[in-house]
Length: 119
Image (cartoon, rainbow, N blue to C red; front, side, top):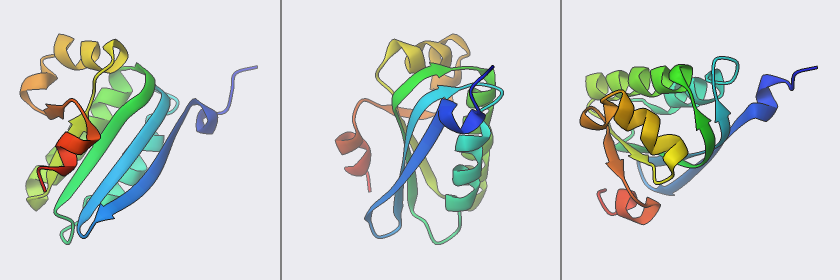
Protein backbone atom coordinates (compact mmCIF):
# COMPACT_ATOMS: atom_id res chain seq x y z
CA UNK A 1 0.00 0.00 0.00
CA UNK A 2 1.47 3.42 -0.97
CA UNK A 3 2.34 5.93 1.73
CA UNK A 4 0.00 8.89 2.16
CA UNK A 5 1.17 12.04 0.38
CA UNK A 6 1.69 13.85 3.67
CA UNK A 7 4.55 11.52 4.51
CA UNK A 8 6.24 11.91 1.12
CA UNK A 9 7.00 15.61 1.49
CA UNK A 10 6.80 18.09 4.30
CA UNK A 11 7.40 21.81 4.71
CA UNK A 12 8.46 23.57 7.88
CA UNK A 13 7.97 27.34 7.96
CA UNK A 14 10.46 29.70 9.58
CA UNK A 15 10.46 33.51 9.81
CA UNK A 16 14.09 34.54 10.44
CA UNK A 17 13.52 38.26 9.77
CA UNK A 18 10.69 40.70 9.33
CA UNK A 19 9.06 40.10 5.95
CA UNK A 20 11.17 37.03 5.18
CA UNK A 21 9.79 33.48 5.14
CA UNK A 22 11.82 30.29 4.77
CA UNK A 23 10.12 27.10 3.62
CA UNK A 24 12.29 24.12 4.60
CA UNK A 25 11.21 21.32 2.26
CA UNK A 26 12.02 17.66 2.80
CA UNK A 27 11.07 14.37 1.22
CA UNK A 28 9.92 13.66 -2.32
CA UNK A 29 8.12 16.23 -4.46
CA UNK A 30 6.16 14.32 -7.06
CA UNK A 31 2.62 14.30 -8.42
CA UNK A 32 1.10 13.00 -5.19
CA UNK A 33 2.97 15.38 -2.86
CA UNK A 34 3.64 18.62 -4.78
CA UNK A 35 0.68 20.30 -3.04
CA UNK A 36 2.66 20.04 0.21
CA UNK A 37 4.87 22.77 -1.33
CA UNK A 38 2.28 24.56 -3.49
CA UNK A 39 -0.02 25.37 -0.55
CA UNK A 40 2.57 27.07 1.68
CA UNK A 41 4.03 28.90 -1.32
CA UNK A 42 0.63 30.38 -2.11
CA UNK A 43 -0.03 31.14 1.55
CA UNK A 44 3.26 32.96 2.14
CA UNK A 45 3.68 34.75 -1.19
CA UNK A 46 1.69 37.83 -0.24
CA UNK A 47 2.22 41.56 -0.61
CA UNK A 48 3.60 42.28 2.87
CA UNK A 49 6.42 39.74 2.46
CA UNK A 50 9.80 40.92 1.09
CA UNK A 51 11.15 37.52 0.28
CA UNK A 52 10.51 33.79 0.37
CA UNK A 53 13.34 31.27 0.48
CA UNK A 54 12.59 27.69 -0.52
CA UNK A 55 15.24 25.51 1.11
CA UNK A 56 15.33 22.28 -0.88
CA UNK A 57 18.12 20.80 1.26
CA UNK A 58 15.99 17.92 2.52
CA UNK A 59 14.47 17.00 -0.84
CA UNK A 60 15.39 13.51 -2.07
CA UNK A 61 13.40 13.67 -5.34
CA UNK A 62 12.18 16.65 -7.38
CA UNK A 63 9.77 15.62 -10.11
CA UNK A 64 7.90 17.64 -12.72
CA UNK A 65 4.99 18.38 -10.38
CA UNK A 66 7.41 19.77 -7.79
CA UNK A 67 9.05 21.90 -10.48
CA UNK A 68 5.61 23.11 -11.55
CA UNK A 69 4.81 24.19 -7.97
CA UNK A 70 8.06 26.18 -7.95
CA UNK A 71 7.32 27.78 -11.35
CA UNK A 72 3.82 28.80 -10.26
CA UNK A 73 5.27 30.17 -7.03
CA UNK A 74 7.89 32.11 -8.98
CA UNK A 75 5.22 33.61 -11.24
CA UNK A 76 3.16 34.64 -8.19
CA UNK A 77 6.25 36.14 -6.53
CA UNK A 78 7.07 38.14 -9.67
CA UNK A 79 3.53 39.50 -9.93
CA UNK A 80 3.65 40.65 -6.30
CA UNK A 81 7.19 42.03 -6.41
CA UNK A 82 8.37 39.46 -3.85
CA UNK A 83 11.84 37.91 -4.15
CA UNK A 84 11.82 34.11 -4.37
CA UNK A 85 15.11 32.29 -3.85
CA UNK A 86 15.83 28.57 -4.00
CA UNK A 87 18.52 26.89 -1.93
CA UNK A 88 19.58 23.85 -3.93
CA UNK A 89 22.87 22.02 -3.66
CA UNK A 90 22.18 18.30 -4.10
CA UNK A 91 22.07 16.46 -7.39
CA UNK A 92 18.48 15.45 -6.60
CA UNK A 93 17.39 19.10 -6.77
CA UNK A 94 19.94 20.78 -9.03
CA UNK A 95 19.77 18.25 -11.87
CA UNK A 96 16.02 18.63 -12.59
CA UNK A 97 16.29 22.42 -12.34
CA UNK A 98 19.26 22.53 -14.73
CA UNK A 99 17.93 19.86 -17.12
CA UNK A 100 14.73 21.83 -17.66
CA UNK A 101 16.53 25.17 -18.08
CA UNK A 102 14.83 26.53 -14.99
CA UNK A 103 18.17 27.58 -13.55
CA UNK A 104 17.83 30.62 -15.85
CA UNK A 105 14.38 31.37 -14.38
CA UNK A 106 14.99 30.84 -10.66
CA UNK A 107 17.52 32.50 -8.43
CA UNK A 108 19.37 29.47 -7.06
CA UNK A 109 21.85 29.90 -4.22
CA UNK A 110 24.11 27.45 -2.42
CA UNK A 111 23.18 28.08 1.21
CA UNK A 112 20.49 29.43 3.46
CA UNK A 113 22.95 32.00 4.80
CA UNK A 114 23.59 33.25 1.27
CA UNK A 115 19.86 33.51 0.62
CA UNK A 116 19.16 35.37 3.86
CA UNK A 117 22.10 37.70 3.17
CA UNK A 118 20.20 39.03 0.18
CA UNK A 119 17.46 40.56 2.34
